[in-house]
Length: 62
Image (cartoon, rainbow, N blue to C red; front, side, top):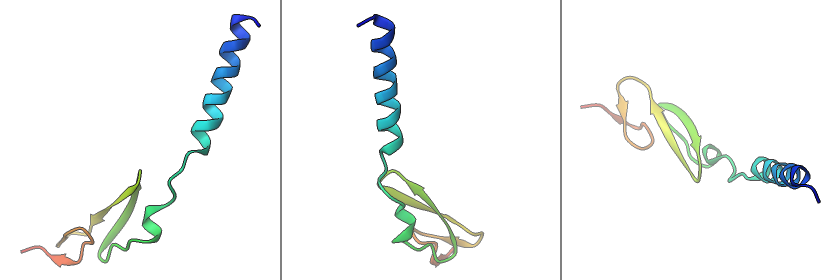
């Protein structure tokens, strides 16, 4: 097998595996009360609206 063919096969396998990796949408099971959920790898974050804070954006800023 030629070196170019080996590199092409490895690149194709890597691309296919990279595209199929997913941990799902973490925002489906977590709710940001006063904000927008941002899906992350095995986690999520809430971007709170002005005046709110906390993990779920459910606390008024003091």
